[in-house]
Image 1: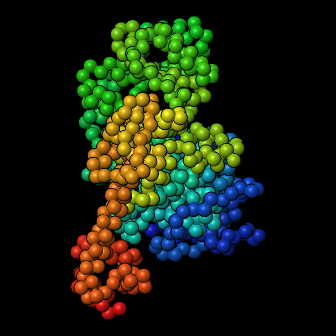
Image 2: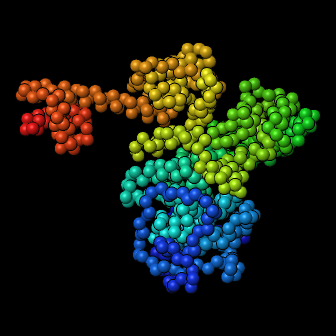
Image 3: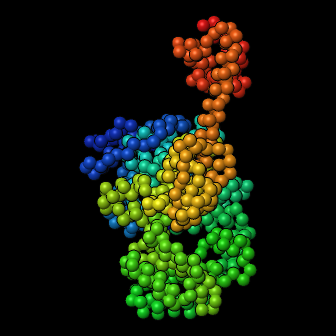
Length: 624
């Protein structure tokens, strides 16, 4: 297997050389807009096409002559050594995958990126190929791998989205468009925020956009050493704040753990190295330390008639660093690992296994979390408990079935794999709207200006999880630290605006009271109620804070417009002019439009704020 030379951010040594031109083969279908004259994408009868978001990117650089129809390497001879590992992994994970289409995607990407280099000096094609390999290793479908191979072509080559759509079809175009960054020269300081907004919106239609973006970021983190030293920590910080939480929200823990550790290494290399040494030392003693507990658990599981495997599960380095607070002195195996019980059975067998664990080892009170009955937002399902080892050390135990394990590791990717053979189900999974965190993002993102969007996104993604309930049993997901006011806004913005208090578990409570997992919350409202400035002191969730700010801004605008109108009424009355009559005739709106205001209230508000002169405004009304 060929080892790819890692690299990092885009670096172009020279423009890609003009490819060889020529006429298409006789009888070969030629799409109207495709650069490569590729045959049309084959679609299943009745398959729905997805409409890509955003306009086609304009080509950059010199125009190129159309290429001859690409010939499949599979048809012409042995596959090149660079792409052979990708084909082998994809063949193993997806026996029915379209290898010819994957080769086609590789050949186009290689030609377009030819002459471009990574920071390491390696050919740029090594990056999209590595991203595709990450996705293939997770078992993603052919379409996703083709999009991964082409994901930088629209951004970094003259290839346009329209040409890509003609050559590879709507589905690939949607995925590539979703991960393509907006042009910084056109968007300026708004580019980063609007790029992430674009990703969120694209993910609402197809979650594979985020899966590709995460794999792209993982490879860039793997090769971060090729970036200038002063850029590594900021890049890693941005990854942990904005991309790692997306991996957690999608339940793709195999990506989250590695991204966390790579970012940790870049942000705090000395702390990372110290944690690595301490964890390695602790894990060398793990088998011996956990052996008595494992033996008791296996005996108890057998007595309860549960077939299960018990495994030692090491924690990733960043998790150990956070949980230890950086104090690694005498780190014990139970602090660097936990036990995983994989049950060969149904959901009910997991609960029996949990009882067996508690029969074998003393449980710590209040430390049982049932994520089977109440799965996390990211579809994660397991039972968590904390027990005391025979030696007196507390440690964590996770219980889940073999069927739950792939979803616990790969999240949405596991659901996409499971649905691969069913087109209708696959489409539903790729665009799941029942993911509460994504619904929350979609609810507030459209109203957030670029300057506030990234801060709001960081706050929303950084929050933990809890679930409270309405009196009729409806579960309301909230971040850790959320208050009754956040709960009210999560129910409905109107309910939040009119909230005056709450009843939590049958007891009257203020709006500022923090909600805990399992609380039953009834919101008390007043039809005349409205938000006040002090609500921002205890509102935690981004949607609640945005609704409050918008309501306050609207109220201030109304008050300013009223004050400005009163001022104008008095000034016009001195000249025996009636503003009410002018408004009825439409004269006020005409003056407002002439001054560049869309509504008369905006003009009145500008007058109150001093942005518009009273004498000039009165003169305009006098001339009517």
